[in-house]
Image (tube, rainbow, N blue to C red; front, side, top):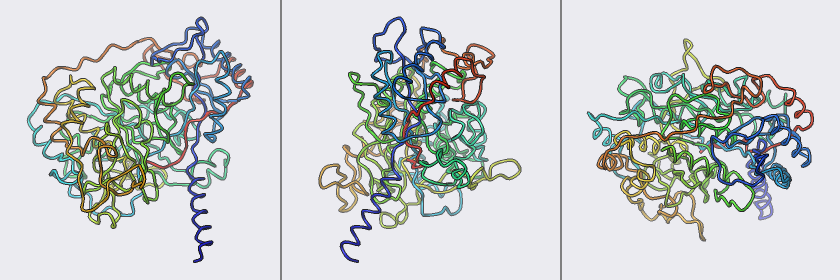
Length: 597
């Protein structure tokens, strides 16, 4: 092959990847200034309520959008006394950012955040699973070598102890009623925050059913509405990503079937399903609302009371970009995530987020931790192979992050690494069923998506033995006492973000793979050894904006409103209709790509 032909081929591949990876957004999140006090407020309160009639806020928003040349067909209230607007389909991120910049010029607008789309952090595995069972779960092997978290030794230590019930929320694509999860998931108490009907695959928007209908996208759907799906990376089968994450956490143990979950020692049903991801990804605002609701935090537009508040929020989705919030500049997603995570901390809850997979083709890892794992207060998790090297697809995390097994099945790295074996489903679109129940399926799959729940489970076990540990104390204990030093494997070069860059399979350092290699047993023992105190849930505001009532829907009580479905749901008022006719606009939230962590 000539140099010219090679150059053309490389350029073509580079362009193809660039086009496929373009970031997308689904509208804008807009906060109007207080009608009585037009001074900008940069510290957000999740339970904030508008101080004027909602109809008046809507009209002011419509007027501001019209002046900025922005049309929209969907508008709904959300957290922080803000509103989400968009025109019903994702647009390019740069277009949404341009719209946001124009809208920020209006003196009646306090802040605008682009509603970017986050992506799943799984990697397609080339190795199919063999027989199901505990023996397949290499990450659950006992020992302190390589990247092993030594979970069985922690289980032995916890045996016979009285443990506090701790709930871990899985913010993902939803969770199927898999036979190996039946008694361990709070199916009746979860919630679906996928607000846009067109991408939900369940025929409606937000509702109280967090079951995963499948995030598939068919060629027929694309051909029927190409403008809606042009930027969703083409037709694809369902990932069952949320069910896979839930299996790592909550699979039933000692039931003579399937696999074991890291939360095997916890009583009751420790997994709360919170659906935030649909066909083309997860919108920022759906993630934000899911985080707040899962932790039991009241906010503007909250759909209902969460009967089982979670102390640990697991998020295996993310988007590009750092998380530096500069409050002297216009609000962006970094500030919104930062304030939401700070609210979780005030409640005594932790966001555990996957670092992301820079390359879907597994050719090399990435330098930048994805957002919101990169945000202050989040616990970022990256992936290792069984030897303890950074998995070659995994993004870096700073010294405040942590690393554990995520799998790397490529023979060139480690032929014995079968990735993370977990619950799934074989259905290419909707779930495969037998007798009205999803089939008992399993598979091995790598990704930082599946490292995060191992760490989230460890955090839950630490609180189970000592629930009164503060967020700061627990995180400090985990980073200082719940890890082992990073592993030096042969002559493998150290991971590096400076020239010469080395971001594939490499030897970890604290600067690139976090505080160390997770040691679940050491973490749990440290927590149990601290002075025991009970957990007292901080009081939260009971006053919040009832979205359903404002939109003409009905509610049973103040604390159990039937929230809006982002265009589906309650009847529209005359103000809604007029606003829709006047406006109609594209708002952005990230990219509706299928790349998972």
